[in-house]
Length: 111
Image 1: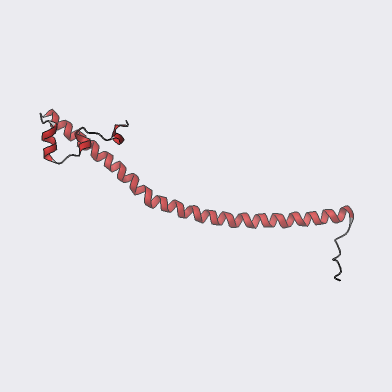
Image 2: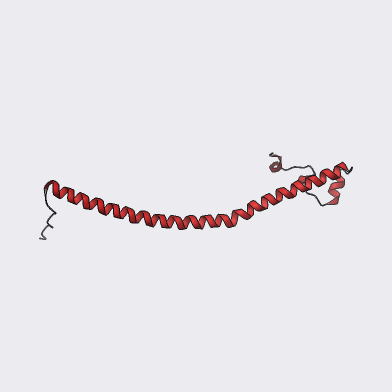
């Protein structure tokens, strides 16, 4: 039969000694685990951030460019209407989208 390990003393002093060593091991474990977790979280957020930057920024630039093109087409259509052209004549030119001539899709009606 194996002999039990002797404890680090009995009574209150032994209890406090074991509790102290237990808290020290727990704090070391928490520190090392939180450091590992922070490193993994940092690399994960870097990957997600660069992916979003690479994919979403060109999309935002394209949306803003499309809005600018529609605005310039609307100004050109307005100038042509002031010169006396009607919608059918402007459509027959073929250079303008229906959104700039006057048939606005629902996305452009939000102002």
